[in-house]
Length: 85
Image (tube, rainbow, N blue to C red; front, side, top):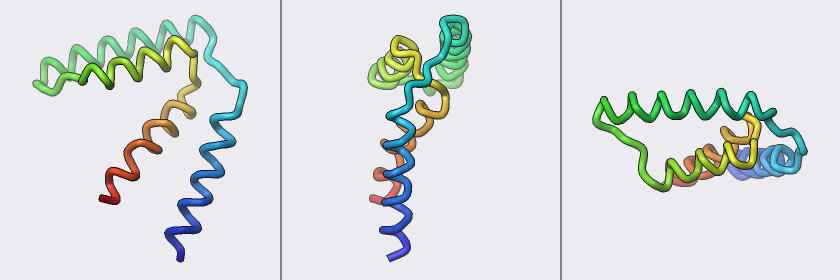
C-alpha cells in the first residue's frame, strides 16, 4: 500500500518536472559537457567506462539542455525499477 502511494507520488513529481520549460543556458551546457568528459576519462582510467548507451543519454541531455534536476529524475526513473527486480 505504502509502496503504491510512493510510486504514484514519484510519478506525479517526475511528470511535473519533465513538463517544465526550464533549460540550461549554453554556458551551463558547455560546463556540464566538460564535467562529463572529465568524468568519462576518470571512469575509463578506473576500468569502468561508460557504455555507448550511457554516453548517448548524456549527449542527449546536453543537446536538449536539460536542467540537472530533470537529468537526475530521468536517471532515477530508469534505475528504480531495476532495483526492485
